[in-house]
Image (cartoon, rainbow, N blue to C red; front, side, top):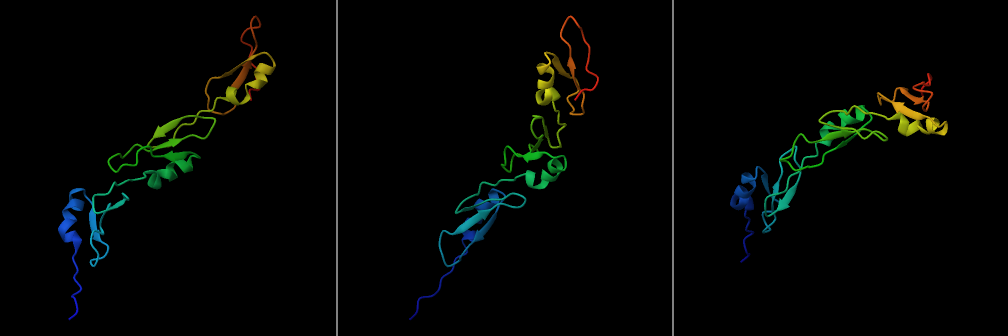
Length: 153
């Protein structure tokens, strides 16, 4: 006699564990025991053997183009499948602005970048718009008053 090759689809036994978590069950080998897995449904990723998986979604995979087109980086602070809509774009240095779900309006304080031109001449730097468009200027010290350098940066 030869022993029979017994197979069991463990997903028939344990599939409800995956289904309850909104996941799919996969029995890797019906000849082996305890190798069934729960796998996350796209766009989420993740899998676990013999139990529900922790599913993650990196929203930057689908949204990074929005940030990259503006010269920014994308970050998803919480990739849990239950946390959607929290991705954000970050401006490149020296700007520190961010925006959730869209490209950020990046500010550049020209006084941070070029203020040494003013301080070197014992003047004060002012950048009212912080758009990086050459709007920064030097102001003479008192008592000369608010005499602005016309050229800016």
